[in-house]
Image (cartoon, rainbow, N blue to C red):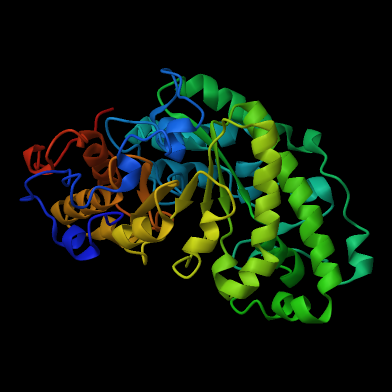
Length: 406
């Protein structure tokens, strides 16, 4: 029995397909069949009041796929651009409680996604453990004193969570604002990804300094990664205790490593984070996303998270087949589809959902929302997501252009 519908079948399914489901005797994924041996059947049982996204992340049965978007709050929204004109500093916007809450809720008020992610940055916690940074308009993040030696390691200290009170306060307010109508999401950067900024001094296209350091100063890099692992673990627990229902770990630049190098320089540290968080917050789902993760899927599965985020270059059906039955998936509509005619976007959403199957799937893009994305397309994305029902053939659902429900 194959894990899922063959990629060719999934990619060809359209609005004229006869049913959302495939027969159990042929292509139904094992994880869709109730079984006392299935991981999903023995995971933390869902409380009826849990948000839809949390239920899906745990693998519990849901009526439709929950949906949210990476970078769903940001420059594509006119209301955000207007606020950014008034508060031009990104750090002010992302480190001031009132602004964090306002920006985080902008897409919630406009589109009603099933997940509301806190407006923040993966570098936000750095000053709290000894790594100051700036964000320049053109260059982006800048770390004036990169850490590349044992001497540089001396500047690090345990994370001082009280310096991140704006994160805690914002999450608490977001939890109250959305109630049980949506999941509140927190997020962090994975140790390797954070280390690339700290070693390179900011963004880079080549990662030559940190990759060289793997061979010339491995003891320094390992010490840095270990320190980041402890800080990030504490930061995740801090977010959960403040109200986050689910946490996404971004190993954004893990895809810049060869699979063998990722096994050595990224995977063990993510595994340790997952171990610590699962011990302290066992019912909080964890999502792992890596940009360019097609060569790492099987390895990602082994870190112990609940959900793997697929980028848009991975075929959803193939991703399901490669990951197996005991883990959820997130994604993975190409963000560029939001620039397409709305009927084409509808068809692609349906294809992705069909290939993902009716359990353990969180609908999302395969990367963040692009600057210039039409808000009408984002509204359409969420309207289509809400219109889907796992017990209803897709061709019977409304095909007309949905209108945004305020």
